[in-house]
Length: 267
Image 1 (cartoon, rainbow, N blue to C red):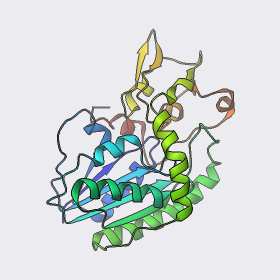
Image 2: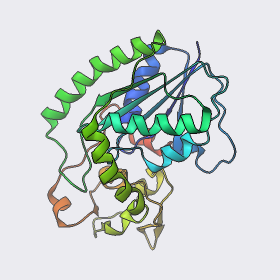
Image 3: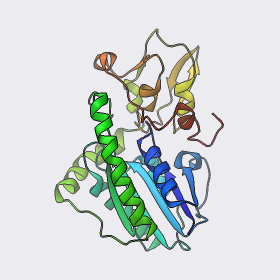
């Protein structure tokens, strides 16, 4: 059975998971959701089995993923699943959000949904974990990915996880996130360390950055993935004084070249 895996990623966790699921399933096409943002019309997957892999943002979906889901035509799809990567829970609320969007649009929802704990890296709120802890989490994640791939390979239908606490937190946190996300980049600054290498421009999934006078300028269509902060090779991009002394994170199984191809452009 052919599978298409659509993914959204900022620092590589969801892409790494998608790659490993694809390798386990075989006959799987990986499609970055960011590569579809400037297209129009319905998205009709050319496969019987469809997966979406994305991170949890404030107990919900990245904004780009919600827009993508509303364009999907799943009339010919036999099995639909989602994997929500997260650094601290919230996957049940995000899966429920996606399920509702698909049901409103398609009259059908997810056949299965999974949570996948990965190293948290929302640097606007906290410092990335120590390398040893990252490795521990990633090792456990590999085992979970194997279980997910097995269930998906058998097209198992599963009741979505449910958490009343997560639903309440979603109702409190996500509307604020949704209304402020686009201009969240106003807190980003660049130091004199910047070499105008253009990495931040190339990896931004929402095409939100351009170089002006050899310095990045944000255009307020941000997804708050924080990929620009994490991938700057000289750590020139900051979000306040606290990030100046903090480390950065990129999933070790994902390269900068991978991230540069998120919009479907050549690295």
